[in-house]
Length: 305
Image (cartoon, rainbow, N blue to C red):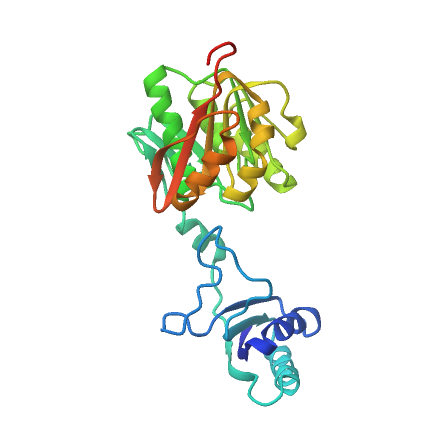
Protein backbone atom coordinates (compact mmCIF):
# COMPACT_ATOMS: atom_id res chain seq x y z
CA UNK A 1 0.00 0.00 0.00
CA UNK A 2 1.24 3.51 -0.85
CA UNK A 3 0.21 7.03 0.13
CA UNK A 4 -0.02 9.82 -2.42
CA UNK A 5 0.24 13.35 -1.01
CA UNK A 6 -0.75 16.40 -3.06
CA UNK A 7 -0.76 20.09 -2.22
CA UNK A 8 -3.83 21.82 -3.68
CA UNK A 9 -5.07 25.39 -3.66
CA UNK A 10 -8.65 26.15 -2.62
CA UNK A 11 -9.80 26.32 -6.24
CA UNK A 12 -8.83 22.69 -6.89
CA UNK A 13 -8.96 20.81 -3.56
CA UNK A 14 -12.53 19.54 -3.71
CA UNK A 15 -12.39 18.48 -7.36
CA UNK A 16 -9.08 16.68 -6.85
CA UNK A 17 -10.36 14.83 -3.76
CA UNK A 18 -13.52 13.71 -5.56
CA UNK A 19 -11.56 12.57 -8.61
CA UNK A 20 -9.16 10.50 -6.50
CA UNK A 21 -12.05 8.60 -4.93
CA UNK A 22 -14.47 8.36 -7.82
CA UNK A 23 -12.15 8.00 -10.83
CA UNK A 24 -8.63 7.12 -9.73
CA UNK A 25 -9.52 4.23 -7.42
CA UNK A 26 -8.16 5.57 -4.13
CA UNK A 27 -8.95 3.39 -1.13
CA UNK A 28 -9.38 6.46 1.05
CA UNK A 29 -8.80 10.21 0.85
CA UNK A 30 -8.20 12.70 3.66
CA UNK A 31 -7.86 16.48 3.46
CA UNK A 32 -6.15 18.71 6.02
CA UNK A 33 -4.96 22.29 6.34
CA UNK A 34 -1.50 22.55 4.79
CA UNK A 35 -0.82 25.55 7.02
CA UNK A 36 -1.79 23.87 10.31
CA UNK A 37 0.44 24.99 13.14
CA UNK A 38 1.43 28.24 11.45
CA UNK A 39 0.07 31.78 11.59
CA UNK A 40 -1.81 31.03 8.36
CA UNK A 41 -3.84 28.18 9.91
CA UNK A 42 -7.61 28.35 9.30
CA UNK A 43 -9.67 26.73 12.11
CA UNK A 44 -12.63 25.92 9.87
CA UNK A 45 -13.71 22.70 11.54
CA UNK A 46 -12.11 22.90 14.96
CA UNK A 47 -14.89 23.64 17.45
CA UNK A 48 -18.14 21.65 17.63
CA UNK A 49 -21.13 23.86 16.90
CA UNK A 50 -19.03 26.53 15.18
CA UNK A 51 -20.81 27.81 12.08
CA UNK A 52 -18.89 27.23 8.85
CA UNK A 53 -19.66 29.13 5.68
CA UNK A 54 -21.00 26.91 2.91
CA UNK A 55 -18.19 25.80 0.63
CA UNK A 56 -15.49 26.96 3.06
CA UNK A 57 -12.10 25.40 2.30
CA UNK A 58 -8.54 25.96 3.38
CA UNK A 59 -6.37 28.24 1.25
CA UNK A 60 -3.93 25.34 0.84
CA UNK A 61 -4.89 21.72 1.46
CA UNK A 62 -2.83 18.58 1.87
CA UNK A 63 -4.68 15.75 0.15
CA UNK A 64 -3.57 12.26 1.17
CA UNK A 65 -4.83 9.22 -0.75
CA UNK A 66 -4.14 5.54 -0.16
CA UNK A 67 -3.64 3.19 -3.12
CA UNK A 68 -3.12 -0.55 -3.29
CA UNK A 69 -0.02 -0.23 -5.49
CA UNK A 70 2.50 2.40 -6.67
CA UNK A 71 1.31 2.32 -10.29
CA UNK A 72 -2.18 3.39 -9.29
CA UNK A 73 -0.79 6.23 -7.19
CA UNK A 74 1.48 7.43 -9.99
CA UNK A 75 -1.33 7.43 -12.54
CA UNK A 76 -3.57 9.34 -10.13
CA UNK A 77 -0.82 11.90 -9.50
CA UNK A 78 -0.33 12.47 -13.23
CA UNK A 79 -4.05 13.01 -13.80
CA UNK A 80 -4.31 15.39 -10.85
CA UNK A 81 -1.34 17.46 -11.99
CA UNK A 82 -2.60 17.61 -15.56
CA UNK A 83 -6.05 18.70 -14.46
CA UNK A 84 -4.89 21.18 -11.84
CA UNK A 85 -3.39 23.69 -14.22
CA UNK A 86 -0.29 25.68 -13.27
CA UNK A 87 0.55 25.54 -9.58
CA UNK A 88 -2.98 24.75 -8.34
CA UNK A 89 -1.91 21.15 -7.63
CA UNK A 90 1.61 20.05 -6.68
CA UNK A 91 2.99 16.58 -6.00
CA UNK A 92 4.47 16.25 -2.52
CA UNK A 93 5.27 12.54 -2.26
CA UNK A 94 4.40 8.95 -3.09
CA UNK A 95 5.55 6.74 -0.23
CA UNK A 96 4.94 3.16 0.91
CA UNK A 97 2.80 2.70 4.00
CA UNK A 98 4.27 0.37 6.60
CA UNK A 99 2.20 -2.68 7.50
CA UNK A 100 0.65 -2.25 10.93
CA UNK A 101 -1.52 -4.24 13.27
CA UNK A 102 -4.47 -1.86 13.11
CA UNK A 103 -6.53 -3.85 15.61
CA UNK A 104 -3.80 -3.64 18.24
CA UNK A 105 -3.19 0.01 17.43
CA UNK A 106 -6.88 0.84 17.88
CA UNK A 107 -7.10 -1.13 21.10
CA UNK A 108 -4.05 0.64 22.53
CA UNK A 109 -5.93 3.96 22.32
CA UNK A 110 -8.68 2.77 24.68
CA UNK A 111 -7.83 1.95 28.26
CA UNK A 112 -9.96 1.65 31.43
CA UNK A 113 -11.42 5.04 32.33
CA UNK A 114 -12.66 6.02 35.79
CA UNK A 115 -15.82 8.14 35.52
CA UNK A 116 -16.54 8.56 39.23
CA UNK A 117 -15.31 6.91 42.39
CA UNK A 118 -15.54 3.16 41.75
CA UNK A 119 -17.31 3.59 38.38
CA UNK A 120 -15.26 2.52 35.36
CA UNK A 121 -15.64 2.08 31.61
CA UNK A 122 -13.46 -0.88 30.59
CA UNK A 123 -12.79 -2.13 27.02
CA UNK A 124 -13.42 -5.86 26.64
CA UNK A 125 -9.72 -6.68 26.17
CA UNK A 126 -8.79 -5.20 29.58
CA UNK A 127 -9.38 -6.60 33.04
CA UNK A 128 -11.39 -4.31 35.36
CA UNK A 129 -9.35 -2.59 38.07
CA UNK A 130 -9.73 -4.17 41.50
CA UNK A 131 -11.23 -0.96 42.89
CA UNK A 132 -14.03 -0.90 40.29
CA UNK A 133 -17.45 -1.30 41.91
CA UNK A 134 -19.43 -0.60 38.72
CA UNK A 135 -18.02 -1.60 35.33
CA UNK A 136 -19.33 -0.88 31.83
CA UNK A 137 -17.77 -3.25 29.30
CA UNK A 138 -17.59 -1.49 25.96
CA UNK A 139 -15.93 -1.95 22.59
CA UNK A 140 -15.19 1.12 20.44
CA UNK A 141 -17.22 1.00 17.27
CA UNK A 142 -19.05 3.16 14.75
CA UNK A 143 -21.42 4.58 17.39
CA UNK A 144 -20.50 7.55 19.57
CA UNK A 145 -19.83 6.95 23.24
CA UNK A 146 -16.74 5.22 24.62
CA UNK A 147 -16.39 7.16 27.86
CA UNK A 148 -13.41 9.13 26.58
CA UNK A 149 -15.32 12.23 25.45
CA UNK A 150 -16.05 14.89 28.11
CA UNK A 151 -19.79 14.94 27.38
CA UNK A 152 -20.08 11.19 27.99
CA UNK A 153 -18.08 11.46 31.21
CA UNK A 154 -20.27 14.34 32.39
CA UNK A 155 -23.43 12.24 31.95
CA UNK A 156 -22.02 9.13 33.61
CA UNK A 157 -20.65 11.20 36.46
CA UNK A 158 -24.10 12.75 36.94
CA UNK A 159 -25.67 9.29 37.15
CA UNK A 160 -23.13 8.20 39.77
CA UNK A 161 -23.60 11.34 41.87
CA UNK A 162 -27.38 11.19 41.71
CA UNK A 163 -27.35 7.53 42.77
CA UNK A 164 -25.03 8.32 45.66
CA UNK A 165 -27.42 11.07 46.76
CA UNK A 166 -30.80 9.35 46.21
CA UNK A 167 -29.92 5.68 46.55
CA UNK A 168 -31.09 4.72 43.05
CA UNK A 169 -32.32 6.17 39.78
CA UNK A 170 -35.98 6.41 38.69
CA UNK A 171 -37.46 3.15 37.43
CA UNK A 172 -37.98 4.35 33.83
CA UNK A 173 -35.07 5.98 31.97
CA UNK A 174 -34.77 7.13 28.36
CA UNK A 175 -31.41 7.51 26.59
CA UNK A 176 -32.31 9.65 23.55
CA UNK A 177 -29.62 9.62 20.84
CA UNK A 178 -28.03 6.63 22.55
CA UNK A 179 -25.01 6.04 20.30
CA UNK A 180 -23.18 3.06 21.80
CA UNK A 181 -25.76 2.80 24.60
CA UNK A 182 -23.21 3.68 27.25
CA UNK A 183 -25.56 5.99 29.18
CA UNK A 184 -28.40 3.46 29.12
CA UNK A 185 -26.02 0.79 30.44
CA UNK A 186 -24.80 3.18 33.11
CA UNK A 187 -28.40 3.84 34.18
CA UNK A 188 -29.06 0.10 34.44
CA UNK A 189 -25.98 -0.43 36.59
CA UNK A 190 -27.22 2.30 38.92
CA UNK A 191 -30.60 0.76 39.55
CA UNK A 192 -32.94 1.80 36.74
CA UNK A 193 -35.36 -1.01 35.96
CA UNK A 194 -36.83 -0.09 32.57
CA UNK A 195 -34.47 1.60 30.11
CA UNK A 196 -35.14 2.61 26.51
CA UNK A 197 -32.20 3.55 24.26
CA UNK A 198 -33.19 5.12 20.94
CA UNK A 199 -31.29 6.63 18.00
CA UNK A 200 -31.96 7.69 14.41
CA UNK A 201 -28.85 5.76 13.28
CA UNK A 202 -29.47 2.02 12.80
CA UNK A 203 -25.77 1.29 13.46
CA UNK A 204 -26.07 3.00 16.83
CA UNK A 205 -29.16 0.95 17.68
CA UNK A 206 -27.29 -2.26 16.80
CA UNK A 207 -24.22 -1.21 18.80
CA UNK A 208 -26.33 -0.30 21.83
CA UNK A 209 -28.13 -3.65 21.73
CA UNK A 210 -24.84 -5.56 21.49
CA UNK A 211 -23.25 -3.59 24.32
CA UNK A 212 -26.31 -4.05 26.55
CA UNK A 213 -26.14 -7.80 25.96
CA UNK A 214 -22.41 -7.81 26.74
CA UNK A 215 -23.14 -6.08 30.04
CA UNK A 216 -26.14 -8.30 30.83
CA UNK A 217 -28.45 -5.34 31.45
CA UNK A 218 -32.11 -4.94 30.41
CA UNK A 219 -32.01 -2.18 27.79
CA UNK A 220 -34.58 -1.95 25.00
CA UNK A 221 -33.22 -0.41 21.82
CA UNK A 222 -34.89 1.03 18.73
CA UNK A 223 -35.61 4.13 16.63
CA UNK A 224 -36.89 7.32 18.34
CA UNK A 225 -40.55 6.32 17.95
CA UNK A 226 -39.88 3.30 20.18
CA UNK A 227 -39.81 5.67 23.18
CA UNK A 228 -43.33 5.50 24.63
CA UNK A 229 -44.97 6.76 27.79
CA UNK A 230 -43.28 8.97 30.37
CA UNK A 231 -39.88 8.70 32.03
CA UNK A 232 -38.55 9.75 35.40
CA UNK A 233 -35.15 10.47 33.83
CA UNK A 234 -34.27 11.41 30.25
CA UNK A 235 -30.66 11.63 29.06
CA UNK A 236 -29.78 13.33 25.76
CA UNK A 237 -26.11 13.71 24.88
CA UNK A 238 -26.26 15.14 21.37
CA UNK A 239 -25.36 18.71 20.29
CA UNK A 240 -26.90 22.12 20.91
CA UNK A 241 -28.80 22.58 17.64
CA UNK A 242 -30.72 19.26 17.71
CA UNK A 243 -31.28 19.67 21.45
CA UNK A 244 -33.08 22.96 20.81
CA UNK A 245 -35.27 21.35 18.15
CA UNK A 246 -36.04 18.40 20.42
CA UNK A 247 -37.23 20.51 23.37
CA UNK A 248 -41.00 19.92 22.86
CA UNK A 249 -40.55 16.19 22.23
CA UNK A 250 -38.21 15.49 25.15
CA UNK A 251 -40.30 17.49 27.60
CA UNK A 252 -43.46 15.70 26.45
CA UNK A 253 -41.89 12.37 27.45
CA UNK A 254 -40.81 13.57 30.91
CA UNK A 255 -42.95 12.49 33.87
CA UNK A 256 -44.07 15.20 36.33
CA UNK A 257 -41.17 15.75 38.69
CA UNK A 258 -38.85 13.89 36.30
CA UNK A 259 -35.33 15.07 35.49
CA UNK A 260 -34.05 16.02 32.04
CA UNK A 261 -30.26 15.79 31.59
CA UNK A 262 -28.70 17.39 28.50
CA UNK A 263 -25.09 17.27 27.27
CA UNK A 264 -23.19 17.98 24.08
CA UNK A 265 -23.43 21.68 24.93
CA UNK A 266 -20.52 24.12 24.81
CA UNK A 267 -20.37 26.53 27.74
CA UNK A 268 -21.12 29.47 25.44
CA UNK A 269 -24.32 27.72 24.28
CA UNK A 270 -25.80 27.17 27.76
CA UNK A 271 -27.97 30.30 27.80
CA UNK A 272 -29.62 29.56 24.45
CA UNK A 273 -30.37 25.98 25.51
CA UNK A 274 -31.91 27.25 28.76
CA UNK A 275 -34.08 29.66 26.74
CA UNK A 276 -35.26 26.89 24.40
CA UNK A 277 -36.48 24.76 27.33
CA UNK A 278 -37.85 27.59 29.51
CA UNK A 279 -41.51 27.08 28.45
CA UNK A 280 -41.39 23.64 30.14
CA UNK A 281 -38.73 23.69 32.83
CA UNK A 282 -35.77 25.60 34.26
CA UNK A 283 -32.39 24.21 33.18
CA UNK A 284 -29.23 24.86 35.16
CA UNK A 285 -25.59 24.03 34.50
CA UNK A 286 -24.58 21.22 36.87
CA UNK A 287 -21.10 20.23 35.75
CA UNK A 288 -18.47 21.15 33.17
CA UNK A 289 -15.31 19.76 31.60
CA UNK A 290 -12.99 20.98 28.84
CA UNK A 291 -15.39 23.66 27.63
CA UNK A 292 -18.46 21.39 27.68
CA UNK A 293 -21.34 21.72 30.13
CA UNK A 294 -24.02 19.39 31.47
CA UNK A 295 -27.44 20.95 32.13
CA UNK A 296 -30.42 19.51 33.96
CA UNK A 297 -33.82 20.50 35.22
CA UNK A 298 -37.02 18.97 36.60
CA UNK A 299 -40.50 19.13 35.14
CA UNK A 300 -42.81 20.72 37.73
CA UNK A 301 -45.22 18.40 39.54
CA UNK A 302 -48.81 18.69 38.42
CA UNK A 303 -50.58 21.35 40.42
CA UNK A 304 -47.33 22.81 41.77
CA UNK A 305 -46.35 26.29 40.60
